[in-house]
Length: 111
Image (spheres, rainbow, N blue to C red):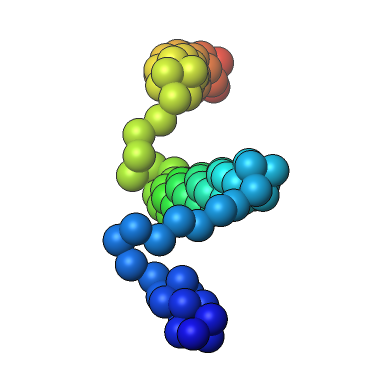
């Protein structure tokens, strides 16, 4: 009869009580919360690294485009370059006038 009572006590049902040590419960909660925190930290770091890689790839593509188009003049020029070009054009025009004037003086001296 005791065997039958032990079997009935070992059956799980609606009224079954399970005893657990409070220390074990706290440890289980702490370990599971640390695991969740670690998982989300690693996931966050991986996402951050993926975004950094995408930005670097985009910057590299833009740099390649710049490297090719800038020397060709397809991307414009710096304001300093534009000012320098204006000054050079002005100097070239003045030099042409001076050369014409020198040529006229040479012709006059030959006569």
